[in-house]
Amino acid sequence: MRSSRKRLNSLSQGSSTFSSLANIFSNLTFMTWGRIFGSKEAVLDFCYKTGLIPDPNSEPNCKVPRCTGKYYKIEDRASCKIGWRIRCQVCGHKIIPTKDTWFENIKLDYEQALFVAFCFVCEEPISRAILQIDVNKNTGTNWYGYVREVAEVIISNEFEKIGGIGKIVECDETHICSRKFHRGRYLRSGQVWVFGGICREDNSTFFVEVSDRTRETLMTAMQKYIHPDSFIVTDSWRSYEGLTRYGFAYHEMVNHKKGFLSKHDKTINTQKVERLWRSVKQDITFFGRKDQSDEVQGHAIASELAKHGYMAKFIRPLEQPGLRFERICKDISRVFPGPFGKGLELRKI
Image (cartoon, rainbow, N blue to C red):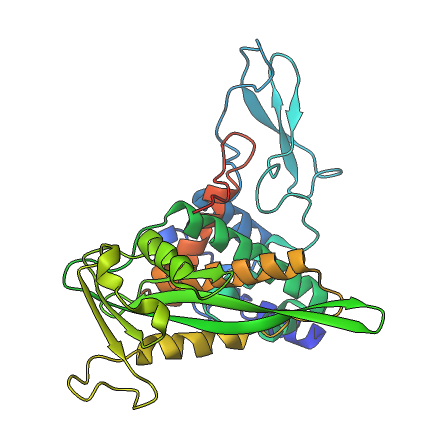
C-alpha cells in the first residue's frame, strides 16, 4: 500500500499549485489529484478558500462573554497539527481553528480525508481509497461513514416532495433484510421493508423504512413524500387500490403476474423503481449480523437510504468529478462550519 501512496504523491512533483477554486474544480480528476493537492500548503489553501477551515487572515470577534476583542493568528507548530491557532488580543482566549470542523481531532492528513470524500462522490469503492491513502480497512470505512453522515444531514434539510404537474412517479416497496436477535440457541427475525419512489423526469427519489405494507402506512408515506398532482404508477398490490381517494390526481397500476408492462400502455410500468432497488440493495449487504442490534441496523439502513437520495438529487446530475467534489465540500462546510458558525443538524422529515 505504501507504493500506491508513493504513486499518488509522485504526480505532484514538479507541478505548481492551482490558484483558483474554479480552476481546481474544472480540472480535478483522479489523474490530476496529486498535482493539485501535492503539498500541505496547497491542501490548506484549498480548505481556507472552501470554508472547511477558517481563514487565518480573518479576525472574528471573541467568543468569551463581555469581551470586545478580536482573534488573531499565532504560530503553534508544537501542539497544533495545522501549525497555528487563534488568540484574543484582549482576554487571551485561544481556539484551535479546526474545532467543530470536519478535521477536528483528525489523525489522517487533510489531503487523505479530502481524497476519501472525492472517492465517495465519484462512487468509487472503499478499497480504492484505502489503497491510495495507505490506511487500514476500518479507517477507510469509518471515513466513508463520516461523508455519508454529511449526506444524511443535507438531504434531511433540503427535503422536497418529488413529482408534480406533468411528472410521473413510480412507487414500490421492497424487502431489504431480516433483523436478527440472538438469545442462546433461539433466533427471532423480523422483516425490514422500505417504501420508495422515483420521478422519471428528474430522477428525484425518496426512501423510507416502513413498519408494514398496509394501506394506511403506505398512504401516509405517499402523502408525505409525493406531490399530489403527480401521475403515480404502482404495481397491483392491494394497498394501492383507490389511491385517488387520498388526494392524488392520477394513478395507474400494472399487474406483474401478467407482465411487467401494461398491455394497454407500455409507459405504465415500474421498471425504473425496480432498477433503483437493485442499486440500493447492492450497498446494503451488512445487515443481519450477530453483532448488530436493532438500533444499529435501523440507523445504518436510514443512513444508507439517505445517501442514495443525496447522490440521486445532488451528485449524479453533475458529470464532472470536480463539480461533484465542489458540492460535497460545500455541504461539509455547512454541516461543520467551524468554531464561529452554527452547523446544520439532522432533521426528522
